[in-house]
Length: 64
Image (cartoon, rainbow, N blue to C red; front, side, top):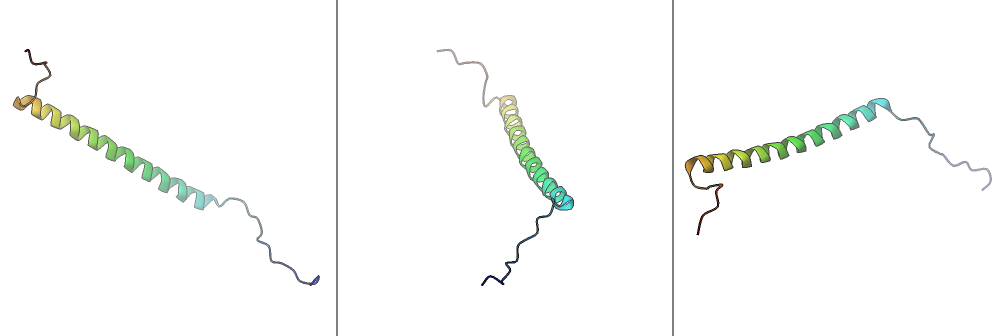
């Protein structure tokens, strides 16, 4: 039993190419989510002004 050797993984430094691709993927994912959020807000604003222009809604409180 004392003569057996266990194969250990050799520790290497970080892979620069791998980290670049991971960073690129995370950046694109975050950018895509941000753009989707921005488009949703833009759609809501456009809908609001369309309804306001057609007279279906008003920003003035109705008098009683």
